Image (cartoon, rainbow, N blue to C red):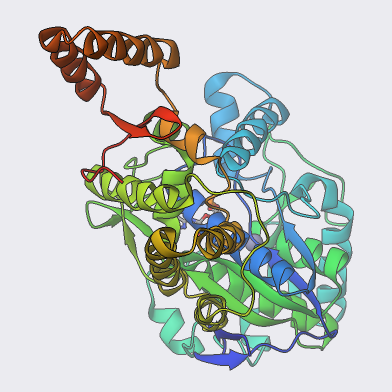
Length: 461
Ligand code: AMP
Ligand code: ZN
């Protein structure tokens, strides 16, 4: 049975959705004021694999990933660029969609934009005021009163007094308590604003995810996720707002991913140490990036270096080598490989173990090649099927090995080599061989003629 680590209970739990065989899942989305970086890619690729795995195991899934399109950073960026906020968010939302598509991320079922949910947020804030959980401060802003919500701290596992002494709480002269957080801010001049019972203004950040998730998935839903920086205060505050308003529990399972790090620090826009997805894609095959993001468990930290990506490319070459030269056929069924793959994924989506099972399968495909072509082909079909659950190994092996290569040049070189060998012109044949090697092209002479692949991997098969 699938077990998922729940930040709320700090343990792996058997996953039982609220509705049998249906999963409702909300993942906090990107604040769209810049290009997405590999840290984002990590969080959303993890979510994508959860989505794919649920779907593969026969669950119906509703996956919501919001877009934060109102925020101080967006307003600042729009002012710097002398652009409207809508133009900034539109541009970077489009770029995000392109980048995520390149990484093979499935499109969420709903992608709500915060600015389209202001009426729902206002209604939620009104409820919180009516129920005595929120107040209008002397400066006109509306705050959530943390000390009136007893379970506060349940997600980050701190009690209120510990949190109070933490440095990450914004102090404000108008708050009843430093932990209180803003639900509605009165408009400042030249800032985008919406009418509300408390005057023209705009929502605070946290309220948007409560309003959007409950609107689209109901007051209770199965999974809520994001990177681990969101545990406190964002998700803690979401729980407080939602439960204070509904008096019901909110998301059942909270999943949080570890950071993608660069030079031992979290990759982030604010630290300026980020590599955008599109810059990485200019250098590396999207599948290499995706594989890299899945090669460690989603909850652990992942360190980005160019060397690691080179190793990943080599791992993919091994897989695609195993997938080459097979007849199209049905997948092998009921194998130990599929069972072990499922066991790994059932264990809190353990993708590194799942990948190691796929390696064993690739090895078996190569072993069977000599003795039982048909069984080898059925195992290759299985490798492709299981790879699809992780969103890898779906390219044709020839396309994979020949990507980024001037195919005409290689074919011309192969023809020249063939001619030179026929003419026993060994000097010319050697010259061509050296040229091909400099292009990282490995030739494979077989019964059906000469095929080739580009490889960084040193063995020839
Ligand atoms: P942001 O656009 O900064 O609001 O972040 C959107 C999502 O990406 C959140 O779930 C963050 O936790 C996640 N995220 C941001 N940076 C990283 C990182 N370096 N590694 C993993 N996830 C990240
Ligand atoms: Zn959120």
